[in-house]
Image (cartoon, rainbow, N blue to C red; front, top):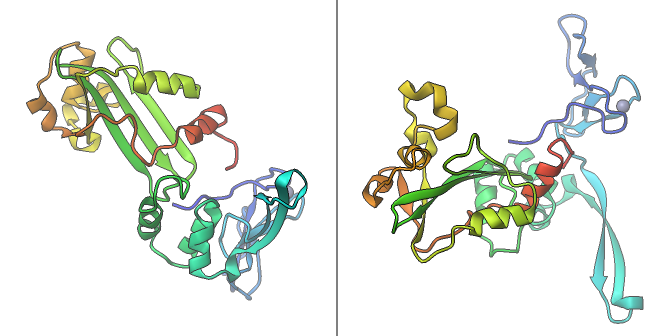
Amino acid sequence: MLPKIFNCPECDTRLKDVVYGLLAGPPADNEVAGGCEWSDFAPTKVCPKCGWEGALGGRSWPIEFTRRTQIFDEAAPNNIRNEQRDYNLSTMTDEDLFELGRGIITARFELVHRGLDAQAIDDFYDGLEIGNARDWPLIRKDACFIFYNSETQLVEQVCTYSAQRTMHEFQYLRAGFEEWEFAETLSDFRDVVFGMKSPSLQVWEIDLDHNHEAEDDESEAFHYGSKAIKAMLAEERITEDELSREGDKYDLPISWPHWFDSGMMINFVANPFAPH
Ligand SMILES: [Zn+2]
């Protein structure tokens, strides 16, 4: 649920684990003995090349950092005042961490590190009004939307959305596609999700996990055993009754789940390996 750190942030060398306490034998190749003094601020990773130490108390994120923000100020030149503030996550109250966590994901990590329930943290940010916190669920969210034309009874497109932390992914499938496609740009994404707009459009959310059919193993990854997706690929009609066995219809068509952030997705598509 929390990100892990494998390589040195300074020189990209594979890090070694610092192990504490009395060791039964010499430390393994990927380990370094750290002595007997353990604390919540003891480094748990060390770089064998440049000597960087970190992952304090098992955290993969820094506790201390400085944040620069621009604040509107009528008295300042150009009405903008630069403000700089130092943070130390480990000394902040839970309440302050929740507040900071609206825009800084490591504050949410710190709450998990303190033992707070990740689901409760996600629920807190989920419950805020849209725009008051970034969509960074700690626990992965998935959704599959069926874009259905109620007049022709054809499924026109299937979209899957997933989000965990800053990794947001989107894929879509239509009849005739060889495989699931990604959207490379925001305008591609908008063309895909708004492209089916019509008075007869219905959007259904189906649960792919419940459609598992063992005998379908070969093509499972393609249609996930879903009757709706199979009907689309075969360009066959499917009734609302049949769709209702796989999922639920939205009262009004929506284009993506409220927790999905297409801007996050574009960052992820552009460079899936960049640190976030
Ligand atoms: Zn290093």
